[in-house]
Image (cartoon, rainbow, N blue to C red; front, side, top):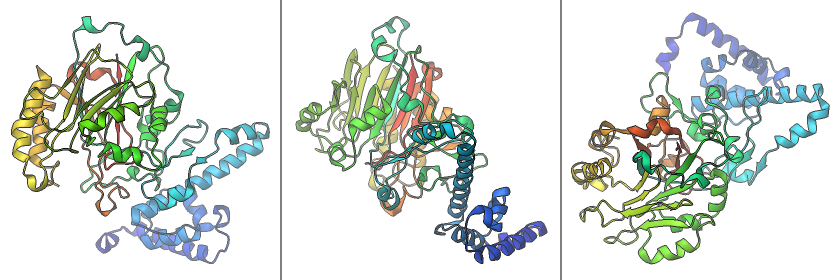
Length: 470
């Protein structure tokens, strides 16, 4: 850090001196409003100065604004940017109220914040905020709803393969010709605004956390990057997939509501991985399913009880369902459920990683991946992230006509779906993207949206979603 400071140009040093002078003036000023504070007013007039400020200058400015100066420089910068954005937004709202008092009450009602627990938001690092509506006005985005705890998911590989055109009959009309849900449509703004919002510390997934970030990379933000659903005249299916890391534990989790999640996302099909159910548990789980999702299909491990396990839950009745790859060497752990629908096949797959000590690495890359690839086609030394596993993924799937839908849609976006429980990884957005929707190349252009739900907690993975036009 010291050498970087010494390498600043003369103009930067002069700018630092000017900021230091204004900081001293700000400390002597008891009123910390922007309009009465020379430092904050100066930064407000030219927000680009924030990036050039030193850590000490940032901390002094935050103290002046009444904000605890905690964290690394990027967090201090984000906190100051967020403060200025809110202050500017407040001034704009006040001006709008004065200009049009007759519509003031309606605007206030439409932009009220509904919070389950402010204490949860501040004290629980896993209680993240979620947008429920967007007010489209002169400002970019208003955050309206702060969610409590929900749920998460993992290693799913859902591959869809186009069927013969003769199979694309009208059997799915009742489900796919549905209206775009206003609850989902209005939650997120268009991708045009993705670079206009400051980092929100209550949304850690918006932190670009990567050891070697490349120029042009940005952090994934579902508020600005999710696409609105297709128009009501377009047939489509919406699929979610989670690695829940134990379904029974999830359903018992305080604050989690499957009903709320279904209402919020209005999905047609839900794929689950790592359910950890035994055969004896399945019937009771079926009885507790949400109304409308009567079609459910479960695969459980027979060799290790309470291990692995996958499922497909759907409000659309599939044409047929199969379990496993038809190979005894691979089918004893309940890792695959395949459902055939009118115009596509859907696989919910819990892919084995190489395990502790990489003991299953050879099995993964020489047996499992090639077998799965053949079936659906006719930290470098950390389990799940080894070079060999990644190369195998590319060799057996991406190079054989399958498309990583999220990467195709977001080529320069860093988004994660898994955060280990150790060391507060989720708070700092130190994660991996282990969960994918793969589709065959033949239907890749029919993918309308591929997204991540990083705010949904309850597992070390979060859900992912796919909207497929039919």
